[in-house]
Length: 242
Image 1 (tube, rainbow, N blue to C red):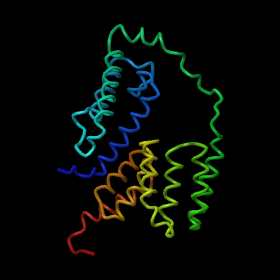
Image 2: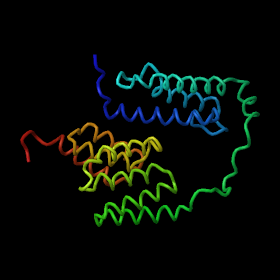
Image 3: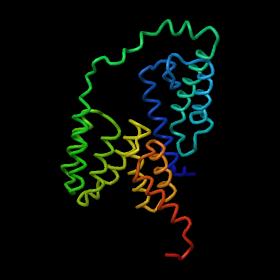
Image 4: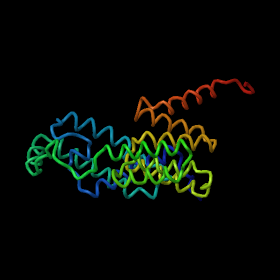
């Protein structure tokens, strides 16, 4: 018996599982596992844990993602372990005593100046508008080499996908967009572009999910808002109507 292919929503879950799994390989602090600052109290610990297990409980893993079950179990155990330690009355203080001091805000970083990345992204956008797809891809790729962010990778993927001379690379571009979501599951650019692709492919439910994720990540995302309005109009249009 063959397993059904993952839906768009399940693919997003796959991205979240892979992202969290990769993060766990870096041995994060227990507070980080729960997405909390070190100053968090017991109720914040409990609330965050309950929110996360609604996503990462092994019993909730769909059949189409069964290959990820081992990773899901590890993620769940990490959440439970963090909760059990930090929710306890006595153990948090002992645990916090083992931590290194938090990094001082404002310390110099080896990261490239944001202005350089922004300049490349602007140049790539201008090249894309002129349909200079190869140049746009190169500029976005240089931005991504500097910042390693999901947004710059999604921009690079879109330059490839939009190039009419590279139709055979559309699947590669889609894979890059999902990789962008692995780097940043809230990447509004990647979600919007995946929504457009889903619409072009005729999968309106998947398109709507991606557009809603784009707006959730960035409430000012005008293109995603426009796409959602068009989808709503399409739903309310009477059959055979124009």
